[in-house]
Amino acid sequence: MSVFDEDKIDCHCHIFDPVRFPYRDDTAYRPAQQEIGTAAQFVRVMDAYGVRHALLVGPTSGYRTDNRCLVDALETYEERFRGIAVVDNDIERGELVALRRAGVVGVAFNPAMEGIELVRDAGALFALLADLGMFAQIQVCGDQMVALAPWLAQQEAQLLIDHGGRPDIEAGIAQPGFQALLWLADSARASVKLSGWQKYSRNAYPYEDAWPYAHALLGAFGPQRCMWGSDWPFLRAPERLDYGPLLTLFEQIVPDAEIRHQIQWETPRRLFGFDAQRS
Image (cartoon, rainbow, N blue to C red; front, side, top):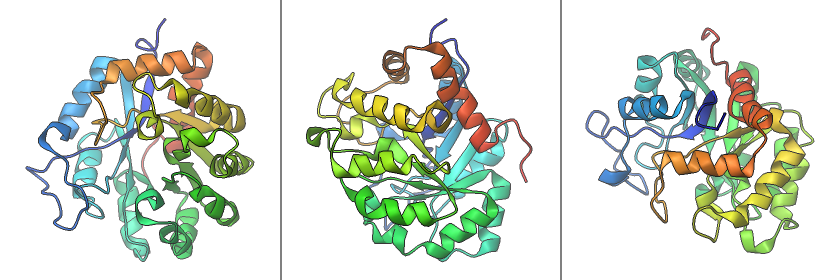
């Protein structure tokens, strides 16, 4: 059996539908026509590749804190999707509860784009996420985790680190930021996405310079706290990407079918409540 035949949950993908949900004027990047992917289109992609569920991440590009497109997808395909929303740090509890009822399981923070103070100023929101049993998804790059890891370790919310921490490939495994991420693995509340290789690799596909980082994360977090994501529809990709080659790539990085099953199915199914009734 190959990765194409196995049950899978894609834990990092985005939905863009600017015809029905126009982009905000204040976003730093507005996805181009070839980068647009609607929920209906993505469901077809999922069906073609045997992906049963997906975690939709509200994009900073195009929508920022406008979660209407995300919520529409969650409500239209209730059995297929869960979501990560982008919100203001001062969001009211009632607003967050409403998002949770729609299928949102966490909130995204992007210090890689907006700086680490975005996270360190969100103590009240982290407490609210902890109280509601939701995730704080954090995308860092380079050595940002050096400053953030001690603070994150003190929070009670469940943590989800995006795209393997986006290390500086040329700095090596021993770089302080990546070591801080591995240290964070000591917290049972922290999980990591094995995804977004093209965002930090210096090589073309199959991004072999990123493989040692994936293996180090898998060793530190274990398959029970690692998950896979495609990053569909591949915003700002440096070269053409497609779903099939990304699945093949993951099969090369994790050749053991039992470990792949844990990462691509059991772990996200447990963490994000797929097959469970929303509350």
